[in-house]
Image (cartoon, rainbow, N blue to C red; front, side, top):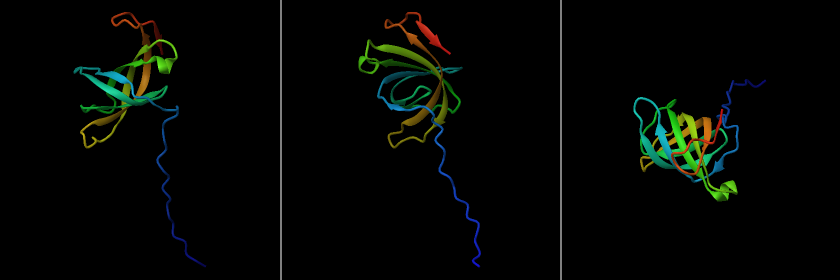
Amino acid sequence: MLAMESVEMQEPPQDRRVMRRFDMRLPAIVKTVGEIQDQMLTETMNVSAKGIFFYLDHIVEEGCPLEVTLTFPPHVTLTDSVKVRFTAKVVRVESPLPASRIGVAAVIEDYEFLKAVSGQMPIQSMH
């Protein structure tokens, strides 16, 4: 009889993403919310119905609330451009790349569609 050693097989980390991600390079304005407010310009890497991923030049902490404004162009919306403002929370911060950019994954908590003209009131808010 062969003695069998207990070997624990490690399962691969589970992907917590539930919604399909779309690789979209869209210009984004990211604002930190709280005592120190900072506004940064960036570009999204991917977007889903529940989350967003982008790179920043500044460090943000996991759990940090954000406000992100994107404009979806006509080739995505199949109509006019659509501007959307998200409130989100940082759920993952990746180590800086060699170019010192920090990857940020955020879960979308709420969003509102904005009128095309800046400074106008939102036309719809989704909770």
